[in-house]
Image (cartoon, rainbow, N blue to C red; front, side, top):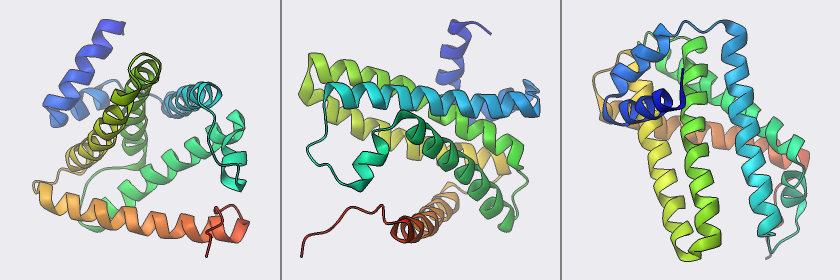
Length: 195
């Protein structure tokens, strides 16, 4: 696959998620290739986050910031979050009658992350050239991540109702956020809140 093909696949993903999911499945990636894609996405995202952190150091220096300052830790957290997301998409989707599996969910989560890495790179350039526009790019990336997650989850499981998938997504986000908050509190890495 060439760079131009990747660009076409991004456009196809945005315009026709069902067809994009079929095409990604047709690639026939092996198990190791799927995991390598997740590692690549996590590594690139963490690399760009590390560069942004060096260029624009955070104002606070709490425990969470210290953890995120280490590129390897950040990459590991990104990797874990992607695997957890793929598992949540699979389990919640199948609980509502979906047909998707974890292997395909893993590829889709990695693909969404790679698209967002492209936006992250653009945002980094904008932070240098036109700082105010970087915030707009952050909002675009956030909205796009939600759109892609809902659209690709719908296509993965063969669902027909976008509103129902959106509700499932919102419920899943709250569930995962609750679990992660409990873990973070147990490990003592939540930022301190002033009274």
